[in-house]
Image (cartoon, rainbow, N blue to C red; front, top):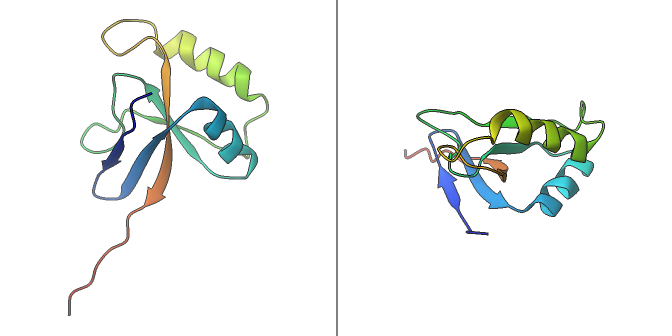
Length: 93
């Protein structure tokens, strides 16, 4: 897995593996998911979020996501997971 950290105007996305994503969800954190050739964030924001409040079965949700979104070589054949952190704003006074 290629280690990536992507920043946009609002968030910081750090690429994680599937086991880490599952652990974050069980701890109540939100995880971004994209096909592996698509990067999250500005300007296109084509990622989806996995929310722990509505997640019943992680493996089944990933299976459905992969079937519907990771089905061609152009966007990628498997999902990538990203930990989302809010970017801190610096106020210069």
